[in-house]
Each structure stands twice: as structure tokens, then as C-alpha cells.
Image 1 (cartoon, rainbow, N blue to C red):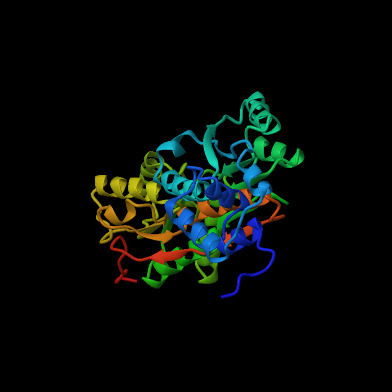
Image 2 (cartoon, one colour; image 1 turned 90 degrees about the vertical axis):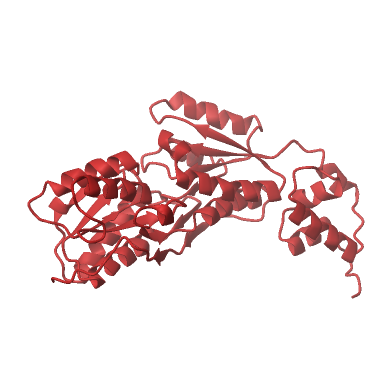
Amino acid sequence: MQKPTNVTISTIAEKAGTSKMTVSRVINNHPYVSPKTRLKISALIKKFKFHPNMTAVNLSKMEPQTLALVIQYEHLFTNYYFSEILQGIEKAVDDNGYDLIILNYSTRHEINISHLTSWYYSKLIKGFIVLAPPMTSPLVRKLKDEHIPFIVAGGHAGFKNINYVDVDNIAGAIKATDFLIGLGHKSIGFIGGPFDRGDAREREFGFRKALMSHGLKVQESLMDQGDFSEDRGYQAMQRLLQNKIRLTAVFTANDLMAKGAITALRDSGLQVPKDVSVVGFDDINIASQMNPPLTTVKQPIFRLGEEAALFLIDYEEGQRNDFGKILPTELIVRESCSHLWNF
């Protein structure tokens, strides 16, 4: 194949599906590139007989590129969801020669937010990935007002004119509820997430919409709220069991609350799925290991993190402007649900 004319570092980056910075790092034998990416870029450089000029070399002398992952919920640090989304972010960061720091801050202290944004102005951070922020987040508001590069990963509902990557929470909740109704369940409980989280609201909306589409009444007494933690799922399930209306199934807004709900049902002398069917949301790595294995809505958690990081990297290098992406969900059927034969 004839070598194309005017091959540049941008040409190699485009064909490799990476950034120019990553190509520069390979050229200069920089350590922060994955072996797979390094091999691909090296093969392209050899194929096109590319000889870098001083511009490419000078890229290696730039300050290290650092992205910040910002978390506002303390329990996320020990959450399976966080672990998987972090792996996706780290892959994109490593493949493109960037660094990552993880930050936690409280919405109660505005001074902490100012401290975070000062890192951007000091050129210590190139942009922020804000993980599932509350809908009233002052950090998102400040980043937007000051035109600082950022993207919301998950829970974007409630914000306007921001960059985001999220999953189709509404469609996922509809799939879960439709599945239970298809098994004959009509008295279905719901355990939602924090009301100030956009993803929690969307999952509740999907649940309500599915019931109404089948002509079923939304029974508020069979709805409770947790905080996406196992303990709160347990407590919410206990409260639902105290209602006069007996439920035969429950949809929880995440898998950890489903785990807590199953424990509460078992402690109350009920069997899953014989007495009560349970569906979760997320498909974290413990879902298939629960007793019984959990039927759940799978969201592409790893990809969510990877897409968010790639957006910021491309944005920094002028390859993207406004961005909004919704990723699909999938219902994973396991053993925590059964038909309701006496309907």
C-alpha cells in the first residue's frame, strides 16, 4: 500500500482511535499508555512510515493531563457500582495517557467547591467527571456557570444544557415492571432511591408508567424510599410488609437495596421467589451470586465510565462540543422471580 501524503500525528491518532497526546506518548516512549494501545499506534507508525516532527516531540513536554472524578455520596466508595464505573474511567484514562484523581466533597460547604475549581484554574486538573450528583448540586451549577469542562456520569435528569452520559433508566424500569406484570403480579411494591437523584426519579417514573400502561392502579402504600444502600433496602422492605395490602412482588431501584429486601423477606419468614418475587437494577457483580440469583436490569456501568472519560479527553483536545448520550439497558432474568399462579 502506498504511503499517503501529509501523514501527521493527527492522522495516526484518528486511525488508532486515540488522542494526539497518546500518539506523542508512544513516540516518546512515555510509560502511561496501555500495551494494546502502544502496539496499535506503533504498527500504524511503521505502516505509514511516519516520521514525527518537533511539534509531536514537544507534546511530550506538556504538563501531565489529569482528570478528576467527583463523588458526593460517601457510601459510593465501597459500592460495587462505583468499583465498576471506576474501571471504565481508568481504562480510558490509561489508554490516552491521562491521570485520574478521586475527590469527595460535601454539598454543605461551598468553600470546598471553590477549592475544587481552583485546581482547574491552576492547571492541575483538565476537567471533572461528576458521578450521579444530586439534582440541586451546587458544584454542577458552578462548573456550568464558569464554563469549566465537566460531564455528568449518571443521574443527569433535572439538569439543563450540560454534557452527560447516562443510561435509559425509564426504559429499564418499564422492562422490570412489565416483566413482573407478565408473570401475573398486580400487587407490586417499589423501593426507590434518594429523591434528590435524577436516576432514582426516572426509575420511579418508569415503574409508575408501566403500571398505568397495563391499567393497574399505583398503590402509594406499596411504595417506599431508600438511599441505594443495602441497609435502607432492608428497612424499606420491613415497612412495606407492615401494610394491609399484601404484595407479591417488589421492584427495587438498585441491586444493593434488592439484597437488603431479600434479607428482610427471609427474616419475616417469606421465601423468594415462592412468596415474593424481587427485581433489582444495575446488575452489579454480586447480583448473580445472591440467594437466589437476582433478576435485574443490567446497565452498562463500565461503558458509562469509559464514555464519560473519553468525552473529557476529546473535549480537552478540541474534538467535541456539546455531548449527551443515553446507553441502553437489558433485563437479565434469573431465579428471584416466579409466576403468580393464583391470579
